[in-house]
Image (cartoon, rainbow, N blue to C red):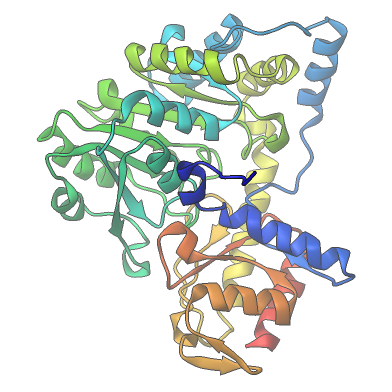
Length: 394
């Protein structure tokens, strides 16, 4: 009897970041010394005060099923965090806690989108946005941006992309993969366009909110007229180095929050009990508790830009957040390096893996075929060695 996967799964792309990480692991298992700069995962340990909270939760026997949308006191802590950090007043009934921000995004897509709806994605965008939109039977509409505009969409580009079928705009700031951060003025410009189209909703992915080197984060939900049409997505994976704890959350109009809770109740139910208790502690702590990680990322960004700037063919801008650089490497296209033809960013990323033993990610996966993503969530020693290898290889 033949095995036939569903059409939806066959049409789905494999996550490029996870695929590159798997390839790097395979090569390591073969004995190769691979430096991984492909995954978006902080290399710090979880702060001790959060670990202690989790240990206490175990001792306090938090082992039962949790409410589908999250513990009430965690949702209150999230509400307080939104007010403190973002000047946003999301009530607990507008908040849903999920198993990671990725599930939060998936929930929103399934709750809001219908067959044929269009979703604007400023490119580059996070690798999973497009396939999540497609799983909801909607249509991703890419808006190309370039390094000359710091990979940020302009109001004119947004206006040109809107059609009668446009239902949503999805974007991240700070951005994965580019590290770009939208200023208040830039968000106000986008909001002015959206005000002319009241039926378009916005997903604002703010998972890198605290890893921000420009001095302050701005949420588009805080721009005049945008609160009731914005779904703010966040979590603890990046700023608190809690990737494996899998806690994300949304603040949204109540009807969307209720829809996400209904959907989640049939898919995963509530998120992990111990992790939720630890997240209360994380969110109630002052930002100063994690500032050492942010300062280290800032230092690494400057180092990586300095070292990559010494390599002919790498075109760079200055990312203002997250922990990625997104160099334009199109100068290498059409060249042959050590007998390998480089026709696109995917060729270049694979060449670096096989000839420099450095894992990066092709920009094609993020909607930009001229670039590669390099994560600097690695030690200074690893970063220096990796970029030295890249320089030698090209």
